[in-house]
Length: 625
Image 1 (spheres, rainbow, N blue to C red):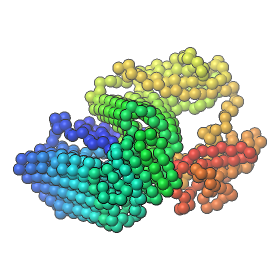
Image 2 (image 1 turned 30 degrees about the vertical axis):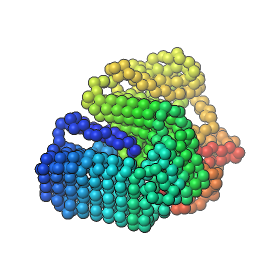
Image 3 (image 1 turned 90 degrees about the vertical axis):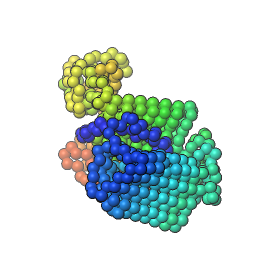
Image 4 (image 1 turned 120 degrees about the vertical axis):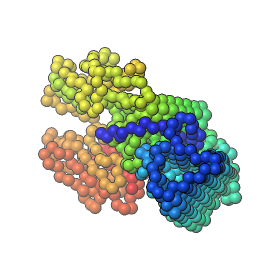
């Protein structure tokens, strides 16, 4: 397991897509470079600045044909101006999403024939108070997210890889000969929108404003001319009426406010809807003959949100909201799984293909889940400022860690689910915590217990004062115990007496008698990787094959394996063809198949069904093309 080195420098970014970042608190940053008054600084040779740069009060910063490496942000206010020109290169040397950014409170940011990168990590920019952001003939190799507020203006021309951006208030945004842009169209309370978006591949001219037919009550102006790959998206608020027709539609960000309780299930990314009315009691949101690629869910204020069996791109709980997610897939295409501002989120029995993060006294409780980022820039999971990430029986590709005053607690039991009575069983797992440099809590102890199932008669196996990273927690001697079902419990404590508990069930069998497993997909069929993007290996266990072929030993007959879409249509099956490849088992190896979807198979959720005789098992898989 990889533990990324921490960065203890101040960090003040922690916000959702639709929420403005708080104005930076200059007093919290000890090292900065101030350009103010009528000062002009011109950089003409490669320079590294280990601080945030503030350009205020008619100050000017010019980078002329040189590379500026910045380990901090850029703040512009009170008519300050930053200009990049003639091959200049601005390099934000950051290592996690949104670590450094451009924040404007009035002034200008201009870039001509320049490169702006963020070290392979997503970059942020935000405009307020009549700010102006201009880029012409520029290259942004990393994805950039920009927010535009308060009568500000953003104009981009001949820019490759624009990124996504949110428009609010009475802003003006225009694009000429740009590509890969993802506008989030704000639909405020009282707005009415009934629209068909042009094809995404090439947009000769499209305007979204009060003058657009079918659009009323938005206040801003968006213009795209001769642009490619325009990924239309909406930021949806209570009190609006929105109908999208006959479109390829990329992002749907749903903001839920107030003290209500709201539930959703079965809504998935990359899905075609003949006519979907999203079950929102406080607005009308409808998709007619439209494919929606990414869903974002944002419970806010005192909302209680239940989400079950959904596939989404991002979910962020904010304010004092409470979110309970079950059996969900977070694919991370629209980024993060997060909590902010005293929010609580429980994420159970799910999978994240990106990263998780917490801010400002919030708590993320993630259990029985996998966090395996598919994109390099999303590998760092972090707890910030008085927040907590609590992990129970989870698997991480890169372990989360804490900054400043935050904490990560990790409790997991990874042992087998069955053993023989009389065995001496190593109970493996993890029991540790990580705190930021300004959090005084330390790891105190952990205890491991056992109990007969469905009782509370816990017996202590071990108490230890040492933390454990994916290793042996305890040795459990089962000599003299009865055959039956048992529970294992791991509890860890910190020095403030906060605790976290993980549970695991285990069957003790008669010696030499194998456990009789129930007929479930988890026991008899396995798909790796899941989700996958080119091919997956499907394993059908010998136990299933032998029992249902009426044999007690090795079966010579493979299962019939079929692939179905979510509508029940069969799209691939045996006998062996171009898509499914059968591998003969050797010894006690199970039967294996490899599915390589044809080019005409789209991304989405599919079902794998293995059948022997009149018995079958089914497992859900996710294909991301």
